[in-house]
Image 1 (cartoon, helix red, strand yellow):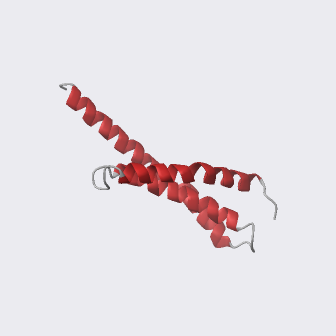
Image 2 (cartoon, rainbow, N blue to C red):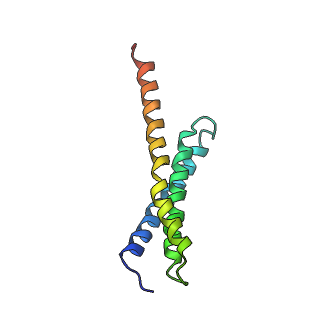
Image 3 (spheres, rainbow, N blue to C red):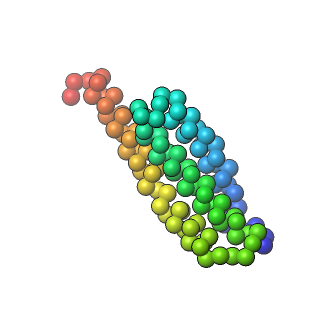
Length: 104
């Protein structure tokens, strides 16, 4: 098979999310896994975004299996919830910082 636009997008996702996974692992391991567990959701998000395009790209080299397409679609849709949890954790830390700085 040739590389179409979906495969190009998958390659682009891999180029973006592999470095983001490394940054997430660094941010989680630096202060400790227990203290900043919010970064753990960033790792889950990046893993889902790496495994999904990997499944889509694996359909290029072999006979197409429906399970690969299903896994790709599921990971593409499910991966949004860890991102929302990262944003929520960041907002909570921001609010805690504001409450420490100002009497509210």
